[in-house]
Amino acid sequence: MVVAREDVEKAAVRIAPHIRRTPLLQAEPRLVLKLETLQHSGSFKARGGFNRILTARQAGPLPAAGVIAASGGNHGMAVAYAARALGVRAEIFVPEVCAPVKVEGLRLLGAHVTQVGAIYSEAYEASRKRAAETGALEIHAYDQPDVVAGQGTVAVELLEQADVDTVLVAVGGGGLVAGVVAALDGRAGVVAVEPERIPTLHAALEAGEPVRVGVSGVGADALGASQIGQVAFDTVAGRVSGVLVSDDVIVEARHALWREFRVAAEYAGAAALAALRSGAYVPAADERVAVIVCGANTDPATLAG
Image (cartoon, rainbow, N blue to C red; front, side, top):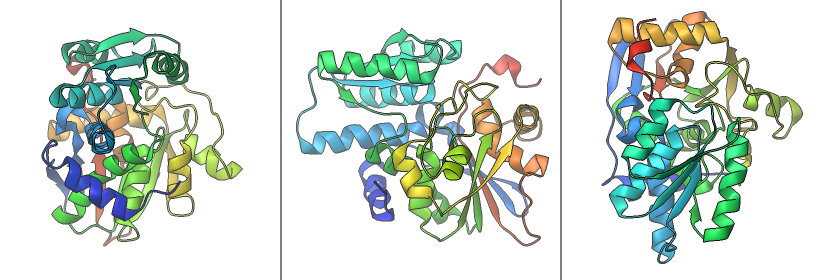
C-alpha cells in the first residue's frame, strides 16, 4: 500500500493538538537540522503513535486491553506517551538489546514492559502473540499506513519552515523515510541514509522486494529492523536515492552534534548527518539541505565521546 500526501496532510490536522512543532537549527548557510530530538518522548515516533490511536478512535471505541507495540525503544516510548496522554493502557515489547535508558523511560511513562528476544523481530513476534490473546490494538513500529502518515507530518512542518532542495533521512524499518517521501511528493528530493551493517532499504531495492538483512552495529537499538516494511517499500521505490554510512562516521556525527550544537542525539539520530560529514552524500554548491535529527533517547554520559 502506498501512503499519499493527502494521508499525511490529514494526519497533520489530526495530531496537531498533541505534538510539538519542532524547531530548525541553522547549522550552516545551506544546512538546517530538524530537531525531532525535542519531540514528545524524544523522537519523531510520537507522531505515528498519536495518528494510529486517534484514527482507530474515529472508527469506534478502543479495546479494553488498550494498545500493544514492539519496539527497539523509541516507538515504544512514543506509543506509551501517546497512550498515557489519551488515557489508554499500553503494553510494550522490546528486545534485550534495547538501551536501558529507553526501558526505564517506558516504565516511567506507565507502560507494561516485556524484554524478550535478541532483536526487534523476536520482540515483535512475542507482541503479536500477546495481541491475539488480549485483543489489544497493534501499533506497528513502521509498517502501518497510519503510522507512516503520522511520521510524514515532520516533513509537512519542514516545508512550512524552510525552502529546501533535499532532505536526508535515517532508515531502519522505513516508516519515517516513507512518510517524508509521501509528504514532500516531489517538492524536494529525499536521500535515505542507512548504516552499512543494517541496509534494509538498500537490500530491498536491489532485490525488488523487502528482504531480510543482518542486524548489528551502533544503530541496532533504533534502526534494528531486519527488513524494510512493505508500506515503506511500496511508497519509496523509485522515489529516493540512498547512501550507506559506517558505524565510525555515525559515532563521529553524534559527537559532533553535541560538540558543535549541544544537540543530544542517539546513534540513529545522527545517522543522516553522518552522510554529509563523511562525504557519502555531497550536495551541489547551491543545494539547500535539511537533515532530520530523529531521536535523542541516549545516555547523556556518552555524548562527548
